[in-house]
Image (cartoon, rainbow, N blue to C red):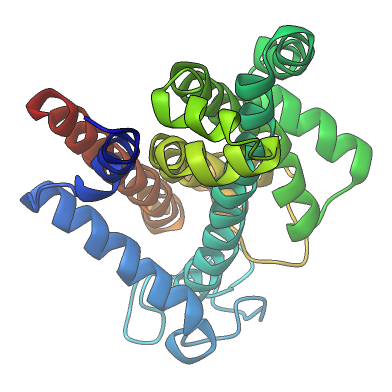
Length: 286
């Protein structure tokens, strides 16, 4: 096999392995699409202003309030629809942000090796020693609350895993023939990292990014549940926090919000696992 053939074969493997269209995967994708549309069209889909207070306190589901009202008379369905926008925004920001940081840090560490690799991985380990929730809590306490600030906190808490995955790919491939050929041709290091190895290292990191979207949404909901989310935005975690005192008398207050969190996190985990399993099957077949 020639160097060019090796490079094209290795680079093509991850991209050509798409997840099988199982019922579970299709359901997860459909769930994500449904919530994404609800979030994008929140001003149209929502039947009420999510922050509008009314005298209809703790009303059960009805034609006027599809999922009932909370302790202040605010429409729960409208809060959940607007909350989908916040959760998806922070989740997608977490996935993309951790992916970008992971690609840069992991790529440099894996390709350079030596002292550079040791320093960057020790920094990543510092963040991994503590649970992601603790890291996010500390960062929010330092930089403040807000949708953008919460996204930053979640990204900082989640990036190390993607960096370690990318580093492993670069360590594995930096001795490949097509990489050696690029070095002999005096190709700049930045081009070897970004053009030669990147197409192979990206798909595993992309799978981790899909999982990080779900983790980011869970972290955002947890922060809001603790009262550290954006006070000016609707959030599933905030609904769950306010529903605690009424668990026994108003099931419609907590169950829908809890289901939203579970369904979205589970859906992204299923999608990520589907891509991961496809890639593993592809490598075995080849």
